[in-house]
Amino acid sequence: MTRVKRGVISNKRRKNVLARAKGYRFGRSKKERLATEALHKAGKYAFNHRKDKKSDARRLWQVRISAILKENGLSFSKFIDTLKKKNIALDRKVLSEIAVSNPETFKRILDQVK
Image 1 (tube, rainbow, N blue to C red):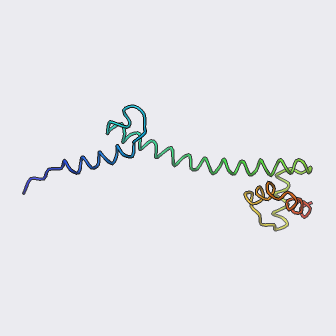
Image 2 (image 1 turned 135 degrees about the vertical axis):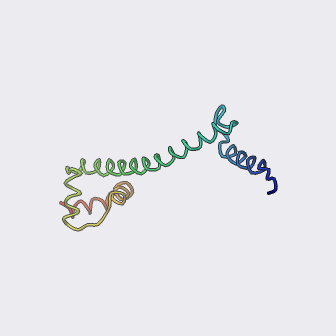
Image 3 (image 1 turned 60 degrees about the vertical axis):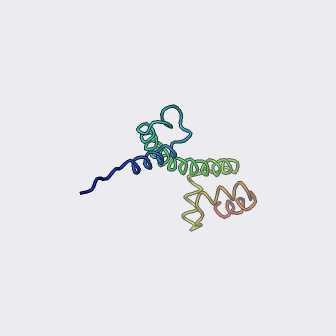
């Protein structure tokens, strides 16, 4: 067997890891082992926070709808329940958009529900 030197591949891997960790503080941007560890953690946080961002958005939609319903003397749960019973297929995202951008349209939906 011929001898295979692996310096090129190791250097390429190291360069890629450090390039991805550019901008991190302290040794995490300069030392390969710390950079690899930081990248793994960053990936985990990114995944988890993508999920959190979705739930935060859902919470915001519910708060927006609930605020307008309280002005009109309805509770959120009763409103959603009657929407389902009357087969009005609008989800919370669409309802909150309508409530914010077109309040008169939302009033018409409320009149149908009442």
